[in-house]
Image (cartoon, rainbow, N blue to C red; front, side, top):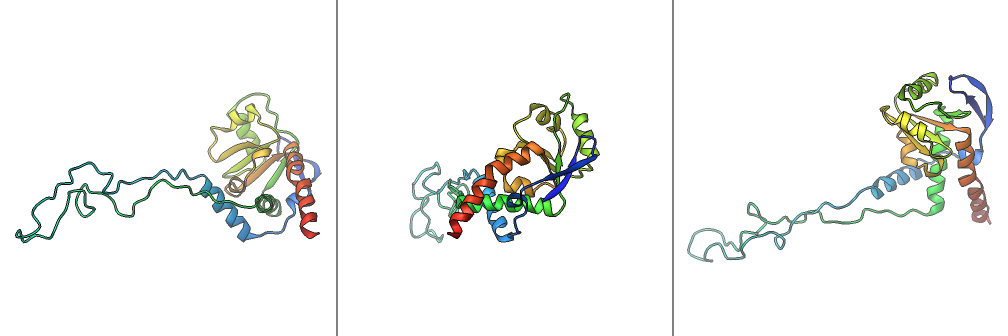
Amino acid sequence: MQVPLYNLAGEVVGNVDISDSIFGVPLNEDLLHQAVLRQQANARQGNANTKTRGDVNGSTRKLYKQKGTGNARAGGRKSPTRKGGGSVFGPHPRSYRQAMPKKMAQLALKIALSAKATDGELKILESLELAETKTRIMAGVLDALKVEKTALVVTSETNANVVKSARNLPGIKTMPASILNVNDILSHNTLLMEVAAVRKAEQIWGTVAAGEDNNANA
């Protein structure tokens, strides 16, 4: 597959070949949905906690005698029916972690990348080397590339100039190619990648995926 190649001025300087095994995978909405839910669930801390009647501080003395008062029978003040009492069926610390087979997770990532390429929301740069760490320089690059709303900027390795120049721009997130994930790809309108970042992604997931597919078909 060939896509336009841009420079920092937003000009098309040629075309670049990208791997169909990474950027040409058919859409599978069910798998994408499962992958997004898994990532969001795994990000949850799961530390919400409530006190049961056994955890509430207070006396266990019976409030009044069992009979003869005309009131309903009552035990201690820690009953869930009383103010300040314990909670019933409240949340307690738990793990929300969901597992997914490695092949499915890799396929979901490739589907997300392919969806961006298919929808024209993938833009590839020759290089994203900035001369200075300036927010206005990064903003100028994004304006030249006609990046609207939100964008995920992907470099081959962590680039301090890019990270610092983009961190004050609302809706812009940067990351190296090695930690690309489905949720970040789909939650940004534009996917902006260096050529070197594309090659890194192809190196990490392209060859491995091809080998796995062959084993699966055997």
